[in-house]
Length: 115
Length: 110
Image (cartoon, rainbow over all chains, first blue to last red; front, side, top):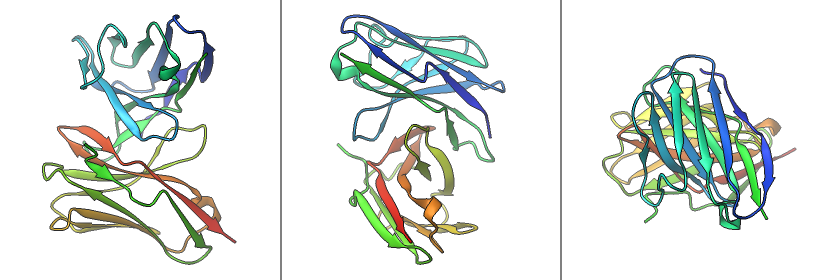
């Protein structure tokens, strides 16, 4: 498995501002994933970040709202831009790890509250 | 369109008995299925997985069953322990991307 850390663990932000969330992995990985879990909801994939290329966004998510950086094989950032209360969620990053090519391991998450 | 569904939002089981969590899916292109456990304020923890070409996978107290014709999978926990109390998510993989169900909150009663 992989050890994944995220910063910050939580934050309270004002409407209209932006927050950048960091994800650090203890080993080099090709693909990193960013998910959102809205209150009482399931996890939804925002985008896939490969090192050296543009992130691939899922339907309903756009780069202007959720810009992603992937400067190297162990680190990625997700920015939540121009925040509104609807952006209040837990944001999680994940990577492939484990014995199969399908098992994703998750960071502890960043709990964001927008007031 | 909810491709992965967990129809039971909660389940309560007595300690020592079997816990059975269910999950249904609609997309026949899913090639791998996984179960995650999530405690409050933590990220999901991988539990067990199964390939779409198998019908059963066992790991200690955890067994996952897959019924492809019914598009149904289940997670069995035997015996259930108090530390198993958590929210359980099933997830399905297509093109290496995971689609999650809504989760089932499992409570193990002493």
